Every structure is written in C-alpha cells, then in structure tokens.
Length: 274
Image 1 (cartoon, rainbow, N blue to C red):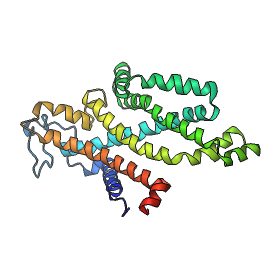
Image 2: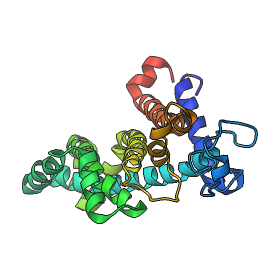
Image 3: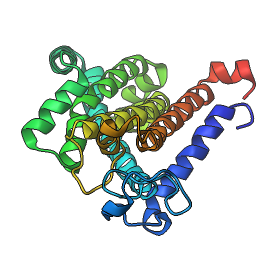
Image 4: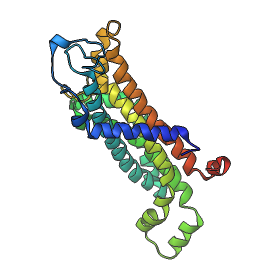
C-alpha cells in the first residue's frame, strides 16, 4: 500500500462507507424520516451536524442511511451484471461460430445501441420505481461490458498450450472453462468490477435524482440532491453534503480499481517495484 497511496485512500474511504451503511441505525443521531417543520432549513450546528432540509429532517442521518442504498445497489448490480456477462461472454468466446455471432454481434450490439442510463430509465419507468427494479434496470445495461471483456479474455486463453494439453487429455468443456480458463481471466474482471461499482453508485444517484430510484421516505443521495434544488442559494449545505458523499464513494471505487489494475498487472509491478 505504501506504493499506492490513492488505493490505500480508496480502501479507507470504502471501509468508512461500509461501516456507515452497516451501523447507520446506531450512528444516526436522529430518525432520517422524522419531519420537524419548526427546524426546517437550519444550517449545520451542534444539534444538526449537517443541518436540516426543507422538512426539518436531519441531513447527517439521511446521508448515513443513503450509504446503505448506494452500496447495496453497487454490489447487487455488479454481481448480477458480472454473472450474466461471465456466462454469455464465456459461451461466445469458447464456442465461437454461431454462438459468438448471436451473443457478440446481435445481443451486445442491440444493448449498446442505446445509452445505458437511457435504457435503465425506460426500464424503471415501465416497471415502476423501487430498489429491485432499479438493480435490474442497471444490470440490464451493465452486463455488456463484462461479456465483451470475458469473450476477449477467453479467446486469448483457450488457445494457450496448457488448455490444449488438458483438452488432449480428455478434459470436458466444462472442466476446461472452470479449472483452466476461468482462473486465468479473473484479474481483469476484478478490476472491471471495482470500476463498475463506481458507475453503479453514480447511476443510482442519477435515477434517484430523477425520481426513478428508491422512493421516499427512504433516504438516498440522489433524492436528497433533487430535494435541495429549490434551496440551492439560500441553503447550499443541502446539496454540499450528499454531493460530497457521492463524490467520495465514486472516488473510493475508482482508486481501488486503479490500484488493483496496477497491482495485478505483472508488467506494472516489475516497473514500479510493487
């Protein structure tokens, strides 16, 4: 970690966000959904560390609870996208031919024809807002990147000598994939997953800002930013703290992804002495 201070910073930030999400009920000084109109739009103070919003709700407590939604969405979206992309990309790269044409040419290009966030917006608008639909919507547009990465890695690995040797000894296709190919393509997938979590946090904030994410009274960073728009100039703290949370969470995943990329790449390790 001493050679990668940004990766260490990202890991520290992610640890803070994770602990915050887990222990939010004990860390939050107030109920994040409690309305107190007599305390509305208060500036940060000893009683309300981050101030209050237009309904008198404590912004600090809502920011803590917002970490839960963001991390749940990030982990769920990346896990689901990676699972689908791993299966389809492996099939396309390993078997080639018609399978590769259907998956890589038709399926992936069809999903790439529309911007991912627009596809997610259309899906949530059709199915209705909510945590489950939000995760499905983001995974629907997120699996393509993993599928293409897996396909490229499988095509490169399946012609290697150790795979051909295992094939000549009678190893089945399933054994070749699970025992010989999959372990050798995990490194780029781990890096892509870390960066994909940053994109998922940002996408969740975007959809919540548009009112298509988790619905009130659940606190989310995107919804907090949307609620603060009309009070931008008189109460800038309404936007500052949830925006800062989004920025730091996204940066933490990006720093970790960059650090993993450098650490897992043998050429970079030799060049930097990691």
